[in-house]
Image (cartoon, rainbow, N blue to C red; front, side, top):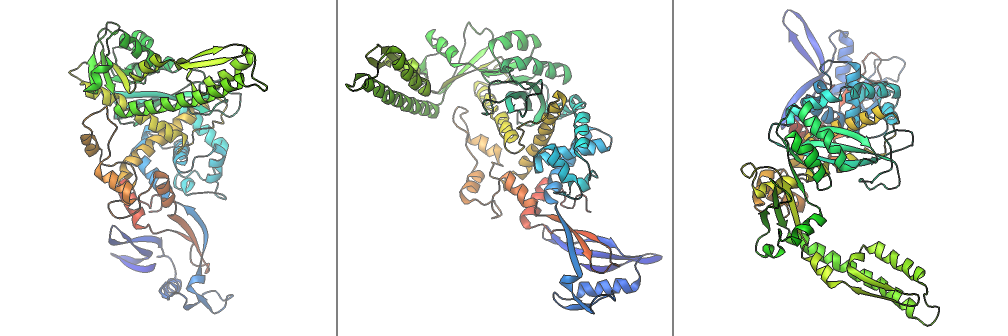
Length: 590
C-alpha cells in the first residue's frame, strides 16, 4: 500500500490510499480509501508507517502508547470473510442476467432470493444455517454484504421463498426463450428426493429413484435443452409414476413456451405407448424413447428383429405394424453385450452354489432339511437374492430338492444381450438413424443434472412442510444448477471434464460405441495438470480454492486512521478462473 497525490485541476489534489497488484501479468493499481480530508500530519504519519520496512519501528501518533511501534503491530485484522467464491458465483449469475430473469426490478426480496441461489452453490445447507451465514456476527462469507441483505433472518428467507415461487412461471418462460427453439430436442426425466418429516401433503412413499429407501419423498421432473441446460422443474407427489408426469410437460412446452414443434426425449419408463397415443400424438410433438425388454422379445418372436443381423453391423432401422408411422432403430453394443454375459454367468454360478448347499442339506443323514415349506423358504431367499428364477427349474418335495438350468431360456436371453431399440416419430430427413441414437443418449445430460442436485447442491433431505415452499426449494436448486452449469462450461479447461467436445464428437463416428474423450481431456486425466501446467480441479475443489480469496477488515491502531477492507491478492490459478468466468474477484469491493 502507498499514498498517492493526484492532481485535481483547479481543486486541491486528491490524497488516495492505494495498493498495487498483478493481473494477467500486468501491474495495476486500485484505490482503497480517499484521505483528502485528513490533516497533513496524519497523512504523513500513515505514509511513514507504510514506507517502513517489515519489523522496523515507526513513531506513534497516540501519546498513550509507547514511543515506537512495528509495522506488523500498527494494524490488526479484525475479521476475515471468504469472498472469492461469492464473487465467482454471484458474478456469473449477474453476467447471465439471472437477476432480471427473477425480477426486472431491484428489491430486497430479489436480493434475498439471489442470496438463496448463490448460497445453494457456495455452501448448501438449511435455511436456518443460511440465515446464520448472513448474520453480521456469524457471517461465513461476504454474500450478505455484497447483496445488502446482511442481518436477514430465517423468516426473511422464508418470505423470499414465498415471493420467488410466485414468479416461477415467468422465470421458466424467460429461460425457455433463451434456450429452446422450434424443432430442437427437449430432454425430460424425473427423480426423487427424500423428505424430512411427515406433515407435507406432497410427501409420499414411492419408488426411491435417488436410492434413499424407506422414507417419504417427493418426485420432481426436470426439463432441459439438448445440452442439459435446465429450463424448468416441476414437483409431484412422492408416489407419482414417471409416465403420468409427461402430460404436464407437454402442456408446458405447447401452451406456456409456445413451441409447436419440438422433439421430446424421454427414457423407456417415461414415454410409454399410452403417453404416445394419448398425449404426444394429439399435441403434434415428436418424440424419441426406447422400448422395454419384453417388447423387444416380442419383436424378436415376430422376426421383426433378427439377432443374427448384428453379426456384421451394430445399427439397423426396422418397421413394425405395431408402430405405424414410427421408426425403430435397433442397436447392438458389443461392450454392453459382453458385460451382460459376464454378469449373467456370475449370477448363475452364485445361484447354483447356493442351491447346491440347500440340496446337500436336504440329502444329509444328520438333521436333514425337511418339509416343502422349509426347503421352499430357503430356496426363495436364494432366488430372490440373485434374481435368477427365470433360468432355473426347481423341484421341491418334503424330503428332497433338485434343480437344473433352463439352457434354452438362457440362450434366448443371451441372444438379446447388448440389443436395445430406439423408437421415434421424427422423419428420416430430419434425423438419421445414427442421429436418433445420439439424441436418445443425450438423456445422460439430465442424469448428470440429477447427480449435481444430489451431491453438489444437496437437494435432500427436504425440511419444508408447506407445498409451496417445497416447490420454492426445488426452484432454488434448479436456478443454482443453471448457474453451476454455465460455470462448468466456462471453467472446463481447468476441470477434469472434456472442454473440446467438438473433437470428442468427431472421434465418435459410431453412436452405438461408448463416447470418446478428446486428446486434451485424456492429457488432463493422465498428467493431472492443465495446458498451463497447473493442477486440474474438480468443480468443488476449485470453489474451495476460490474461497481463500478473503475480504479482510483492517483496523489501524491509530484511531485517526479509518478502518478499511482489503482483498486477498488472487493466485495465478484463481486469476485464470475469474478470467474464464469473465467476472472480477473484486465484485462488491471495487
